[in-house]
Image (cartoon, rainbow, N blue to C red; front, side):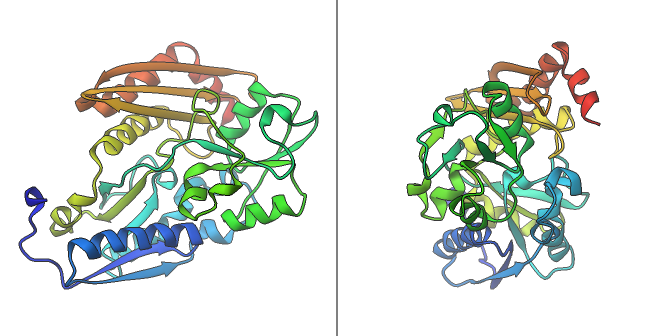
Length: 314
């Protein structure tokens, strides 16, 4: 740890977080990591309800996308009520607003999508016409491409709400991020994890991001020990692809990067919502070129016709 020596530990740190159980787990996790590093520091969590938490009757893509989970937290950073905000990286817009920066990326949990069902063991076993719940166009397009006989319906709300809707029989199965279930101790609900080859994860899925006000450079050294270098470069590559394709909640795309030694391998896709058109490409390269690699992958997808698919989505 000596390469991260912080001369003066801060007297107090305030972490801004959404109030959903998963978001609070993430904030508490970062709180305990920081408390272990800086035992003298008072570390508090400021729980907030975001617009994304309030609008639950409409698919995210229709109400402004993922930034809805981040905006209120950024306001708390801007006006000094909080020092840092903890996010799921997959909820963070591809372009941070002026005046904010991502100070650290925490180690990734299982990045895969999870198949959750009370009566069926896998997607392949679902009868024709079965209703599958997901709030994500990315999951919907990949499911429809692979299993067009299933009926995909929107599923919003926090993790517990989604599981309750499944348990009430509204869906034959639902697809969730494995990471959230694992973090909340609900691993037993996962019937199986879907391999990234069959369901390419969301950009940044399973990784935590720590955002700060860009003027607070004093926090960079304090938060540096929480940064997981492999996760950071992989997420950077994924976000590089998504940014180059103008990725948001309204676009069915995904990317998943892994790294070994000094190399990154990244696979990405773009699809039409109904899954009838789907482009998948992969690329490998040097880890110190993570974002450029993501952009190069976007160019490969463009060369195959990604722009035509994206134009249909506007």
